[in-house]
Length: 152
Image (cartoon, rainbow, N blue to C red; front, side, top):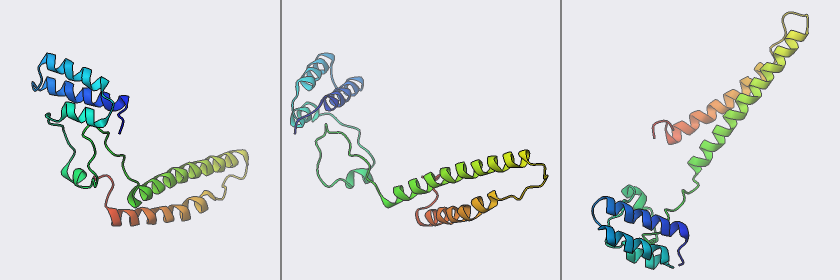
């Protein structure tokens, strides 16, 4: 596969880190960086850094990879899981809920200020109550299945 500019830059950063650790001399660093910027494929880039240690992620992240990627390739993007979709759904709904209840409260206060009746029926309760109970139940279900998101 052909390598891109971001791949070459990533290899150059690995080389700079190795030089900073004392693994490469200055002249070897310059030679390898020049080779990295002229490399065309991942194989070319891998040959430049094959004798250098590269910081890897946690073992759980590595064992999840089925295919062997070139050492110079970018890390794979995070996968969309049911847990992430559920968390995003709940988060968006909490924000919409908060904005809607706030808007209803503002409208209620404006009507209260515009009328001379004194006490006005508190109708935003019918918007905030049932919707809040549904969202709260969803949040409790999410936390019972996947745990507290603040702990991870």
